[in-house]
Length: 330
Image (cartoon, rainbow, N blue to C red; front, side, top):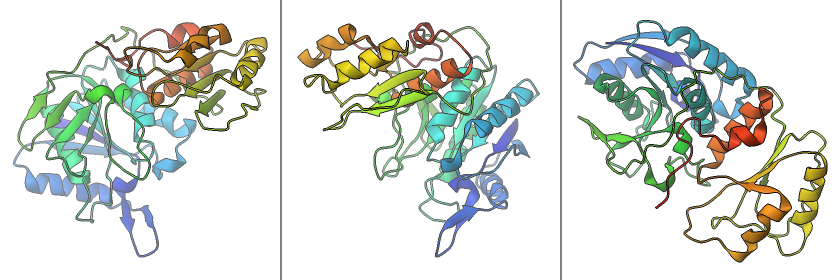
């Protein structure tokens, strides 16, 4: 078994002192040495590093560097690829990889750590072990995220396009509608029988990400005047309240949408898992707002970024499923 490990930095590649956490080049060897010490198998690791950053500093440049790195190595004789990454932007990078390598002929697993590896509370070693065991299991190809939540006995294997961004003040990682693909229980990879597979586009397009996204993200907040500057916008993505709603009563959203329409800027709103919409959502179509199928914010934000970066038909692209980003509802 031969696995390529792509090191990009993050907490999993850092050391903490009394003042702050910083990158530590030696941590890559701690990760591999600990795995070899605790597992009696014949896995051979190779390490490369296209860049090293704390993941909060992620930009289009690093995303493109990582995509190029994976593209260069995915056809080589590795049984799988593991990408070590920071937790802050774990979802963004893994979704970008998922859209580009959804049809890869081997597993690509992104792992991170909630604390540096020398902290007893760190889940980094568990996440890395789960990634190796998932690759060894050969149950599926494509892009995944391995992450163990603090109070969980298992390490979940997630489809990146099903991942939520982190809740406030927590490093826990969850999939929408509990749609984890599988989990590692310390000895076996167990598939989630309730996982609902949806469409995967058969293309093998390796997308680029431009420096300026052209995306205006609006979150539902009380008292919003919607006085947003659209001069550099190519698309608008609205994050609604948990019930899929946003204030439509005072007219300011309607006025904003009129400005967007005049500039031919499409406006999208995320959906939620409800059997019936609220009355306030009935005006979305008259405002020119496109309601997206049930999906996560990060999957749709990165998809929009692809569309704006590659001069695609934005509305058409956003309504086409690429990498299992749309979740089935009953």
